[in-house]
Image (cartoon, rainbow, N blue to C red; front, side, top):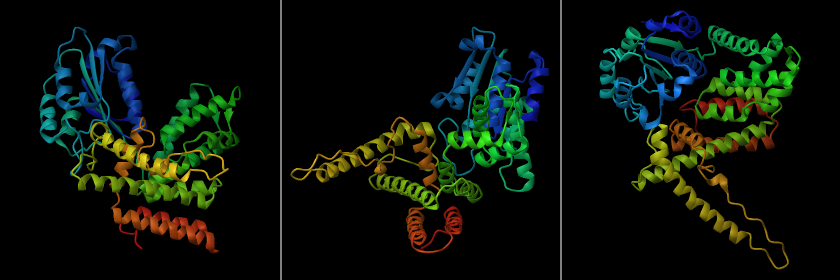
Length: 417
């Protein structure tokens, strides 16, 4: 078959005859576009009323390649069967921890498997975060199926920014056309300034703005400032996330946005200190597990394995810390004669996973911790505290100090005493 850009997918699906649709689809690239491409493909292949019997989304251990090959090659009582796998790590780079079911022999077996036609009426839909066009598997999929390229450059060059703007404008038009609304150019620029290049957040905020303006037909910059500042994803989180990912350009963008939005430099510094402390907690936990020969975190571990193997150990460690913290608080909270009884509160900032039901952010904290050595994190805390002291005791420009600090935190080899 062929490879097409995401922008051409809708026309391809609308004009292709049912009997000539490819049996294998692969969409890769920017997460928001990949998700949209996946939904378009599934909508075209299998009607909603048939999905209970004719559609299988394989997740977790079921998404292993041997199981995928078994499901797609098993004859069904239904004339139609669509098997789908999201975020399949079929192009993992060298040194990456392999997800079970996606080893090199299994990928090679899958590459041979897809050369044989699937049973009539059977379709396979895959998405992945990146596609390596040099790989034999990529060329094999492209040769027999349809590859949808959803990549968008993430750089800061003008050409990259132009492509990012085009995507955001296309997203805006798609959202607003459904409601018959419009958006002023300065409002669009204001919304981009608040969200950065994050198509998913951009789209969500547009939906909120459409609801906010009610019967009015046009979104203004004032609407954006009133709604998005109140409902946007926490920009502090975006900054700490970018620093943890050691992405200086993104971190500086959100730092500038926060300062422009009225955040106090000490608020930003406190958030960075808290993030580094959390990474130190994770690093110490990992080191302790290895010293004791206990199962725990391994570099590049996939999410399902993390939940099954590492998370129970994290929960036991947190329980032990919480018990000690409670003992300390019980001791310190004993009132003197005539004093009211003090309310006890466990010190949750000492825990790796305060909310056991929400494990995905915890998983990403472990991934981020791999980007630092323990020595780098200790030195980062020293520098953060030094900047804190300077902000409170000198006339130096705090914004310049934060700029310099963020760059050093993000640049490997630049965190030193």
